Figure 1: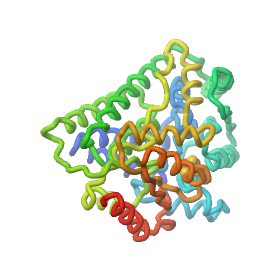
Figure 2: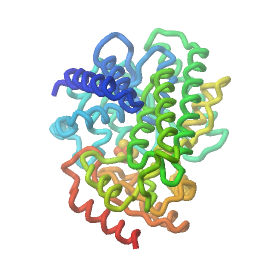
Figure 3: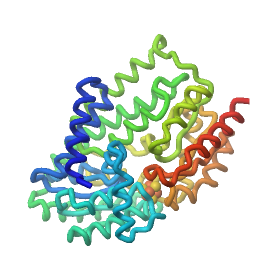
Length: 401
Ligand code: SF4
């Protein structure tokens, strides 16, 4: 598979779409496509990383982060996940491992990306991601830095991560031959904070009954925002998205009937659009929030950006005991006034699947039933759409009584 060709087609497709319908989401995808092109062409130093590491630190050195999750999004949109997953299986990677991480690995093994200067990961819930980066590091012959984020949140934990971020900064300075400019980092952090304020405002609007933009469209947008290192442009698109939702939230525009409000837990799957249509059209069941869209971190301290970013990493619900994630789900269920939750239990993910029972019990404490939908976010081969739909319909029938 030709990765370069795929990215060029993606850019062309998104440009056409954004020009025809200049909605924030289309513009954001076009921006993602432009960033993607720079990952395969040009001179800007590249750093592979994952969604739990802050882009600002990498961008402060003029380098471009490649987020595995964003590569996965492009592969999904372009319908190429099957090809790259096959590639990994041919190279003895287990088909039982997570496709969200394995698909980008397969894309990298296709050889289409420029060689990165560095790989940076962090210890969070994603064991697959940590391991695959070890392989990528060997494949590219480049160093892999793994930031250890302590299990418990405390000021000592923040200090510990901050010290490691200083080491990352030194290494980035070395591999990019660029001195560390703290004012540049402050500026990027300022954009991130401003973007975050719009994300919070968007999520506030979603609390309205009925919710202004039901379904997965909000979640799809918000998840991308955190995986793009665009600084000012990402801020602009997020502001635009907020304004679009603000318009939709006006009384005269709130047309859709809403009978059931749902919290979606974990990622959205591909190729299962029928499930979302059935939820909305047949049951007037609206997804009003996702746990992944929740802003769990405090504003990043612009005066002391490395410590602020260390704090953000430590505050992540992807770190620590499952209770952190469960309590967050319970608060969201209450704040967004949902009647039920759907957990997408992704194939090969020990962390998310392993925690389902605790999530179910925690949500039950506030009277919110949970359906665990088992499938694969990226690999259609692991999905049984008919069976999943039957589970969703049975769950909806119970809720509708
Ligand atoms: S599903 Fe699990 S294994 Fe896969 S990327 Fe997410 S945390 Fe990692």
